[in-house]
Image (cartoon, rainbow, N blue to C red):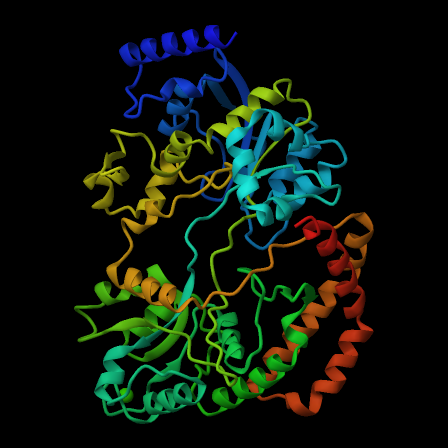
Length: 528
Ligand code: CA
């Protein structure tokens, strides 16, 4: 039997090397899943690609390699705009309502959907299929047990293969280094120095126009102002989603009910009052970074490495001498340097197998293909020879792609690569190649200091827990955010209001929510 398999593999390899695309490593034949082409239907929704395109070069190449052909069967692709903040996309609900679940369903925000409908029978549990037929996925989950835990539904099964981001770093503190230099200052090392620096930005006219018009701290997304609570040992979120729960020594907590948060908000309110924080931080919106840097007004922010570092180049002609560089998180009042934001290692996006799929084994092998070395490369970089070449063992995009006016990531979606509706493991090297050198310097700085902290990867509720959460959490969260904004704007005094605030949270069911979070967390991550 072993002999026969081997012969077949050699024959297939020979056939491919003469008629099909040549694979540099000679392993192309290993990926053939079926002898005759097998068609599987797919629904794929994402705001960037509302349906699955069979002409994508990545799909065409995957067909040649695996013999699995995905056929688009997306329902209602043009009727919906996916909202990042909605747990379930309307398209998925439309698909359920139509009564036809394709062989494969890929989507952004698929996690809660399959974790609800999977246990009810609409999607196949993947655990045994992976165990028996998917060596690459199996190896990945064995190496990353936290991710395997995070994936599970309340019944302990996995119902989707996720999109797994690569690269650790997300946002960082950025400051006008040229302003510091001009004022004879160094990058602030702790919270007291930071306050003095922002005061100097406010008072010393670093942009040199003779007007007191500088805005010391600004944020494109207003919740970034909350990050500053980490300087007083508070937390603003436990994950890459704003206002999320966090884990403190195995206990689920919410950041907005902690002592460090109270101290932090008290000080942020003071900084706001003193004009160290943008007076329009809650309303200025997404163009604030463009505007405040472009007009030479903004001094410091907390934002993404790559896009923020890019202003050093894009504004070089407009803002003379601009040096907007990442600096290490200033030490908190207790001396901790913390980078609270990081890329989350697992997204709620990916793909699942519909319950009427008649080829679950072939499908899981197909999912597994994308976790093989060649499949992962195809998902990340596109087609070898066409979109990238191997240089010193590294997939390297062609000059045409790197020098194009289209951002590389946007281009990749158009060829069917980097699709978050596909379960795949991102390769950070895809991004490194077109990251600004200032961003890479900043990342190196953060890497050296080791400022990242563990993340909360989420829980899957059972039906009872979900009911409790749904009943209480919305109004608690609304109340927290409403009070938070009022305190920062100077309506009310957090010290005086705190006891009443905590009482109100309690009355609104805060302990009940924590209880179900804790129960779900214990179930999900206990096996470690
Ligand atoms: Ca000025």
